[in-house]
Image 1: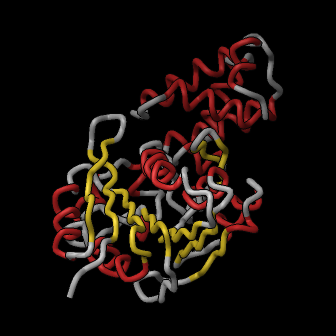
Image 2 (image 1 turned 135 degrees about the horizontal axis):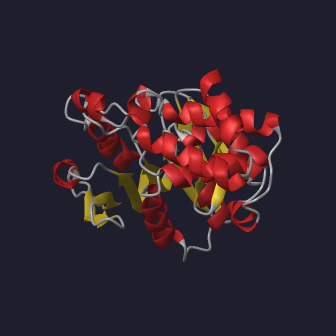
Length: 297
């Protein structure tokens, strides 16, 4: 670490030279987006926007600023996620608090939000929503912001501190009821107009194959979906039917190759209609939707 700091301080002092140096360090560490990550870490360390980095490339940094930036680059070289280093992740064009205790929100999860909003946006009457495994709280918070008529119950088995912080940060804490419980064991109460979840869905044996940022730093309980990645879906799908109102919707994020088995689970439940898979922006199946219907007999 001292060698990295000395090298940077000996040869770099301006924003542009430090960013060039950091980009090469991260490139050698096989980081996927070295320049972008360097810019985000620099902007966060100086508490300025990335635009300001571009407009003042010759700004000279102090030794303490350089040292702080070098420290963040060293952490990124070790493949610690940028969001863990800065403590912030953008989602739905909003900033959310994150740390090593919660799964960092992914861009593809915005597709799940879009689908939920499409299902409920036209409802003017009070709407009850259940968020299973809320984690950082991004789903609950965004839905609460976008749907002022909704009341949300958000369940999480681990620490709810991050989710609560995000709810207060975005002024929706009064409309989200957080419950610390394992939703595989807790009674969900209800009924609900919408049940939404981004459950763990990686096959246990495949976690070791994930990128270092994921397998080394993300909470394994937020990743591990069991032997075939479907453990949580097997529980959620039949239980959700019991807790949804007639005409209520179940919206689930899935792995890119899980649409067929998840849809089969829904069909085998015999309580759903209008079952459909929705693709993300990369063309992968990412969300499965189903509507509760009346089952005769």
